[in-house]
Image (tube, rainbow, N blue to C red; front, side):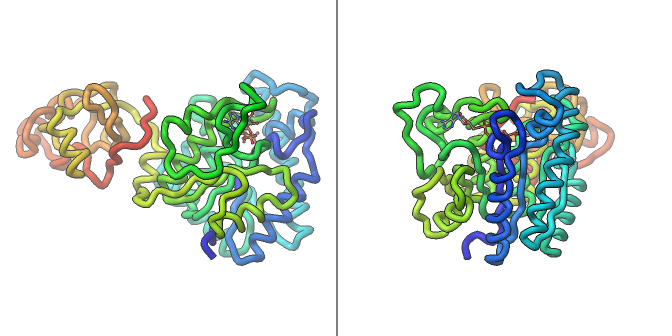
Length: 378
Ligand SMILES: Nc1ncnc2c1ncn2[C@@H]1O[C@H](COP(=O)(O)OP(=O)(O)O)[C@@H](O)[C@H]1O
Ligand SMILES: N[C@@H](CCC(=O)OP(=O)(O)O)C(=O)O
């Protein structure tokens, strides 16, 4: 069996009807297939959207409300409803499920991240299916993961899954957004490397309840493949699509949905956490020699190669590393922005003289650094 631990993400549009009421047939169908996968001896974890959509139906909204408190009120009403229905269907198929609500800060904080891992693996050991959603009622826009596509990819890394399946209201990734030109749509079956061409194909959401559209699914795919996880975007609609997608991926036939192959030299789990879960608090600028040492020789960043800093940050925070023209990586600093301003350009042996104390020779140790990859600004 190639895929022992599978994270399945399902979008709001695939769980609700056009009037934002939950669609029980779809939820029943999903639950049945998850239990079948479990009965094949696999661990399954569900990341389910749909709280806001379900709450909209309950509170009488036809369109997604604009204000955050209204969306949060919908999520609070809808999440209870949603987990109640999952519970009912899982029990009908002889299984148990558990609700886990996560925020971005749960995943940023190293000890909470590891704690979430412990809880999830304990649940899996007990044969319980974790049903995860973002804790929408307590997060504001600034601190939200924001979409369950990227949340599911971060969760897949967290639980050390080998397959992530993203079920949506489309067949997979098309060459262009379906909103642009319905006639010339071509399904992309296999993506071996996510390049700019692939990113350019993705457009925004297609339904009134979805978040992020194909763009956030491509973001999720980047996280997954760089964490050594295969990701498939596939249709939720067909009765057995989830089972068929797993079978297809194990046969390596790639004739349904879009499969993104895992990178061979994926990041270690600690580097996944650092790269995909920690937001940057500032920037350090390095000279050409340091940039080469980091990129070509995998060295740590010493104060001698640093030319400046941007923004205020403390030691232990994540910063972007820039060569002045572009961001070349990111890492956790051993010194604050004020301290780096004082020691930049100096030899490591001079740190004690300059600061009056010594912490580490490296400003960023290579074990706490990821070179390349995606670099959101802070
Ligand atoms: N290149 C593309 N291929 C497929 N779908 C695309 C593409 N670009 C944009 N989309 C839109 O993305 C939507 C799926 O994302 P979204 O609405 O967020 O759904 P979900 O609720 O499943 O997350 C599709 O309905 C489609 O309209
Ligand atoms: N957490 C939100 C879902 C956010 C989201 O990403 O939605 P979707 O694009 O439908 O997967 C909710 O439960 O309504």
